[in-house]
Length: 74
Image 1 (spheres, rainbow, N blue to C red):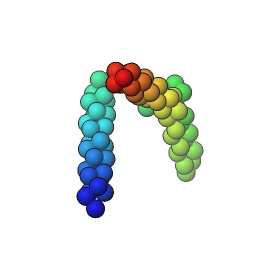
Image 2 (cartoon, one colour; image 1 turned 90 degrees about the horizontal axis):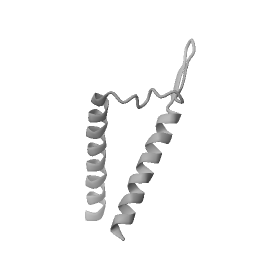
Image 3 (cartoon, helix red, strand yellow; image 1 turned 135 degrees about the vertical axis):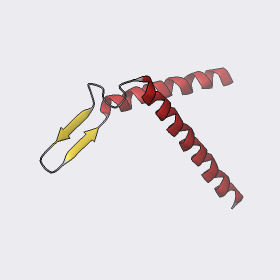
Image 4 (cartoon, helix red, strand yellow; image 1 turned 30 degrees about the vertical axis):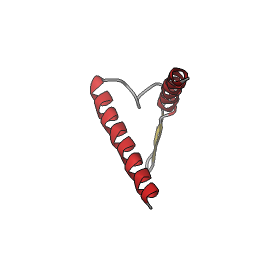
């Protein structure tokens, strides 16, 4: 049971860190979530938002960070 509890605490701390990071990035004025490749559709009774370009950008940045960390560890 201890391992499951530590997993929940670790995941919670990761989400807390990400939330704080997103709040800080929002104040910098970066247009994350409003890039030209993000798909927005507003109909009469439905709205759809899919941040395609923002997702790709975040994926590339995180992949680069993980790559650099991996190279530094070896």
